[in-house]
Image 1 (cartoon, helix red, strand yellow):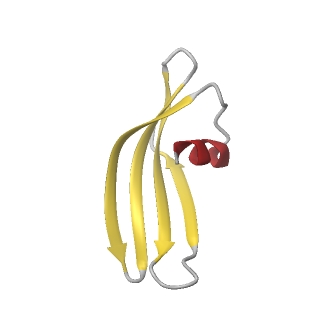
Image 2: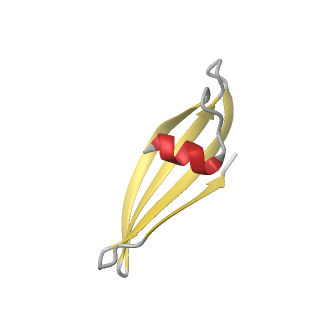
Length: 72
C-alpha cells in the first residue's frame, strides 16, 4: 500500500515511506486505518513525517478515500 500512498503524495520513487505505527478506528459506517509514516530520502535521511488516513465505507458501494497530512 505504501507505493500507492507515495504516488498520491508525490514522493519520488527512489525515496521510502517507512510505516512507524498503525491504528484502526470505526466511525459510523466508516472503517478507518490511520498510519504514521517517515519519508526517507535515497540516503535514508528523514525528510518528513506523515499521517495517512485510509477510510473505507463498510456498506456498498464500499467507497474509499485516502487523506494525508504532514506532521513534521
